[in-house]
Length: 248
Image (cartoon, rainbow, N blue to C red):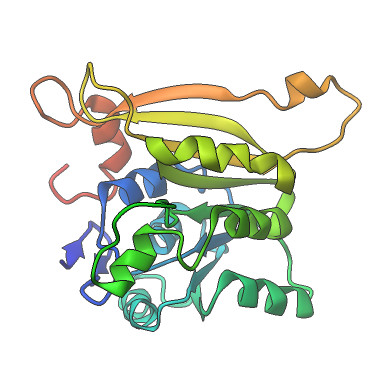
């Protein structure tokens, strides 16, 4: 369903994955404001790319990568109709194809990578193939995503990923193979008293330094709650999303 934000509009009717609270939280929370070169893997309708465009400085370059042709067309339209038609560039194709082209042109690495990836490795899939691919790791496995992040992320860069709780162990368990670790782990709780059902992971390269490795690669654990006991947005959620949601 089309969704209008304070500074841009998203038409996602042709996309496998509609505008979601997950993506809005990720786009609002990720540390993008000082980034110069941002990569959005699996851009879909372009929501995260446009949130990054709104939050970053005028000279920031944002690259959106989307493999699905219908979603890519919607993304191009949403970018063109936004206040930042030249700030965001779309690459239609797989992240592997993008990576190959990127290295052929000796393009600079990205200081921030953002992704709301396909996250279910198993389970019943939607009959709509585009929705199934957007939700399940049919076209982008965790290993392939982590490999792309490892190769495209600048040495001191950050990658922000949102995942459901049931996918965390599998995702985190594969990071060592790609030289990555979790520097921040934000647990997202729907209402007070309930267990976390989502998490944002901030990934960094596992760098060899002269300092104590255990201290260099510590994970900072954080929490946020979406709604309070009265079923209204929490203060944290309100402040986070106020620049985007019309009614906040």
